[in-house]
Length: 233
Length: 217
Image: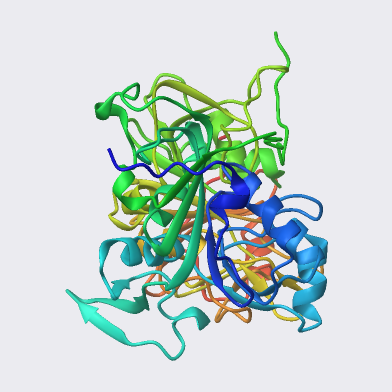
């Protein structure tokens, strides 16, 4: 067993510097690496390029980094629900690259999988395709999209072990698996760091080979963005 | 004239037994409430669930279980969870049978614009571009006209496009229309709406052939 376990978030974040490109898992506020984000706020690293499906809300998730002007550029598919984001974008303080969601995840997965680029039908005929190579396959048009290059990927899982094996829960899986091994260093934080050997190898979603550092996360808030319920009949 | 629920009810009639369906945010989300209960349908949400169920009972909500609109949901028996990459394999790979989404504008050639109003609203396209580029069967749910009373069924879209030549059917508060090579073909009128009302509210080319039946909701 190759041990990936680090003592805490401080150790896990070693080497994070200004002007780096970071990948952050999550969809909305679901499955975001809360410990890593809070530590980025504390480290006060600036000029970051963040690849993340969303940009958090004003006072949680990546919204915390936006608030402190730590982010230079966001690469996302959907950035609603965040007033500070909108203000910084419209004023030109924040650079934004909007990417179709399926393309966004595939650009992560391509980096994970050793593909420099891929063709997708998404965005053909729209401003997303401007300046990109277009090719026809079997009578349909496709856009060439490139793999991301990132310094760190921060992912969050439900359970993990010191070998770096990960299991996700519910829809908190989302972008996290495709970001594992897609950056030079992947840091996984888990709700439960369990003893090696206690996870069933059949049930592991991401094998430890994709992970460089893993730590037991703390104080998860797991905020719900849109609470929708029904009454009992 | 239909309200939003009426539009959702009419679209629900298009959902067939054995369909995997992706519902967009807004009116499309309501469609799930009106699908016949004697057929088997599974709802996919692109953040990573197939077999999406209704909202949870109060107190049973789970922060790790949401839909693409970030609403808390439940998983039905037989449901599965997966990552975003596999989710878009279902979508791009045309394994999803029907996509229902909202639009700001649709052109007579089936182009759709629903993600951006330059200088005003820039929230992003989310999964819409992937959905419209690949789905074999796309139904648009929208109001026939905008708040200013201007037609949303146009010769050419004026807003930035989400996809080209992809919309097959449109259900509005006034009509059901099919997008054909020759333009918008009027299929049904909403209750209390005349063919002339629809002609007046449609800027793009409208094809009216024979008697146009009233919708049965």
